[in-house]
Length: 299
Image 1 (spheres, rainbow, N blue to C red):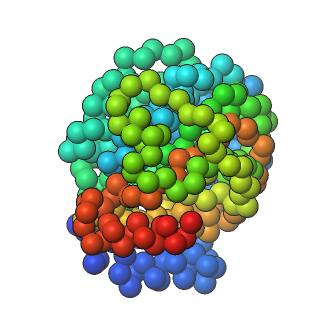
Image 2 (cartoon, rainbow, N blue to C red):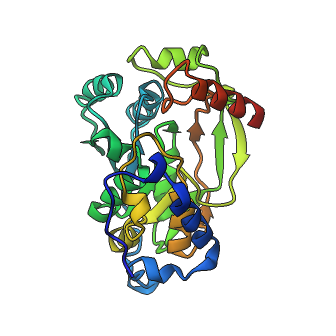
């Protein structure tokens, strides 16, 4: 069963009762095969080649000061053992992100292709839409569904190339990551990112953590699987534009559809910038202040 009758906007801005239904379904309440195309059998998937192609997919809305670290990590530490397609979904209305992409585009790197994809804000606000477009259309051997606050530091992508060789797994994820504490908007790292200049991080500012599943920005999908089932392609809610940025519950739904929590692999050099203030909320509003307080409490 495929659900493709998408509405103009999601109910109540993002989810509404339909969202609760899909979160329950993703807990295993319903068979995943009802809501996706067939998964290609592992034996029929192309094994990871010696020189793989990886597509990195990020979304950016008012986060140019963090996206600049991701894009500069590819300039500072370009891969030599795999080819990378860097796909960034953004909105033309986001002037800072547009200016950053214009600055990065002239950098001509041997194994890196820049791929900027503009979407109307309502389609950008539902991250599942861009991820599904990228998954269905990818030409890569593997697709890393990332966020714009993830960095690929020294040796990261070349180590990933070695880890992917010969594999046919549905879904992989890095076993470890390094993150900052929750940074306020006044932190030097975030302020430096607003200058639209060449930037890099100090690894000493990050702490090591271990992951137990392919969640959020740490989903590395086999290209044959991505092309076959997309990214929550058969769930209408997660392909429906929204009036504001939606919480990304589709991550859990994708793991349910894929039938796996993912397999960990050892990839050094994965960093994430964590931050208190969300770009999706207007600064100074009650909602923005409440969300910032919640994030401080969670930290």
